[in-house]
Length: 222
Image (cartoon, rainbow, N blue to C red; front, side, top):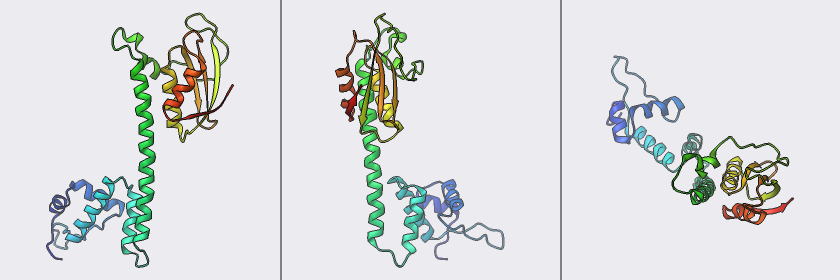
C-alpha cells in the first residue's frame, strides 16, 4: 500500500471527522481496511481518501447517501457513460428547484405573517402567535358567531398548485394571518381550503388574493 495512513490521518486529508469515516464504512460506502495481524492500526490509502472526498462533496451538493451509492456504482460500471451521471445531476437539480420553490412559499407566508404583526404590545395580541396557534378549530366549518359578535361567513376555495402537505400548511398560515379569519381547514388531498371569517373584517376577494400572493391559484369556490 502506497503512503499508508491511520484513520486519523486519512480523516484529516479528506477533511472529515474520524466518525464520518467509520459511518461511511458501516454504510458500505468505503471498505474498511483489514486489521494487521500484529494488532496494529488499520491503514488507509489515497484511493480511499479520494473516495471519501467524493462522498463528502456529493453530500454538499445535496445528494443522498443512496444516490451517492448509485454514483459510486456508475464509476465502476464499464457500461456506464457520462450521460448516466448527467441524468443523476439533472434529477438532483430538479429536486433542488422544487425545494427552492417550497422555501419561497414559506418565505412568502412568513412575510405575510410579519406584515400583519403590530410590532409591539401584549403578546396576547400577537398575530404571528395567533396564526401559529393550534387552538383554532380545523374541522369542517359550521355556522357560528365570530369573536366580534357578527354571524360568521363560510367560504371554500378550490386551489391549484399545492404539491404537498407543506403547501397546505403554508396556505393555512397565510389565511390565518388575515384579520377576521377564525378557522381554516386546508386539505392537500382535496386541493381545497375551507374558511370561517367575519365579513366585517375581511371578504372573499381578499382571502383569494392572500392565496394567490403565495403562488397558488383559485380554480373554484363555494
